[in-house]
Length: 272
Image 1 (cartoon, rainbow, N blue to C red):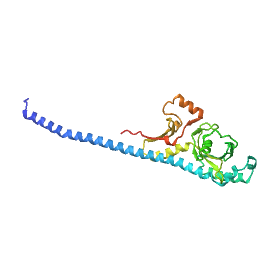
Image 2 (image 1 turned 90 degrees about the vertical axis):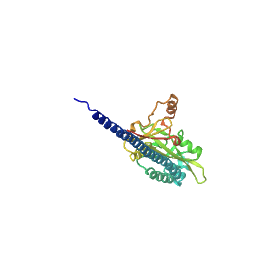
Image 3 (image 1 turned 120 degrees about the horizontal axis):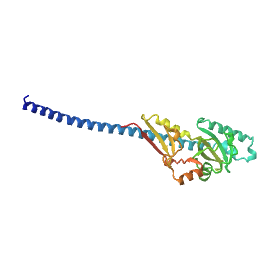
Image 4 (image 1 turned 45 degrees about the vertical axis):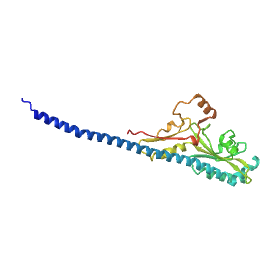
């Protein structure tokens, strides 16, 4: 078999042309892949950021709306009239009937999440409650009672574990009740099922991208809400220090709800 220099040159030329042609194509494919991945990542981040901001706004609106509502409801005349009476005068009085007829419709605004509306006297005693089992209960040590008396403003409490119902975590809104002269006669307080926050987060996450979820943490890195794993609620994402654990146990709470320290984190599980 004879060796052909011409065939060898032809093969080398073809190989050279192929290499010259393929290198730019491969380079363009690599650049296009990188550009596409970057664009997809940025779009995903923007979508998640928008969903996180919307969820945060919804939660803020819920808190602000209830603070404003309880402030306005506390000035309803039937409540002040009832609290202005002595304990003996209140029983079976027309003022008691009026106050009861005022509180019951308020408690039905959100029958799924509102647990009760109540009136507390200046000693913190529950003197009227739509959940009648709470009547005569001493709530004087609670922040939702003390804060409105000290500041004169409406208040949102920490989330608290119910001492009577296992697994129930509650959130309280309250506001001072005043007479016509502006004197504080007691406190109107609203008890919410704290899972309402979880519902807000889950509802908003359903509108975000597929394979994404949102979590809401307090300043101690405790889950306030988790759109895909509600079983993690009120558990810490990291080990808590002994000092924090002791503080929470003393206050008998799962977590502290501070609006200014809320962190809303959205995460995307899809691979880019």
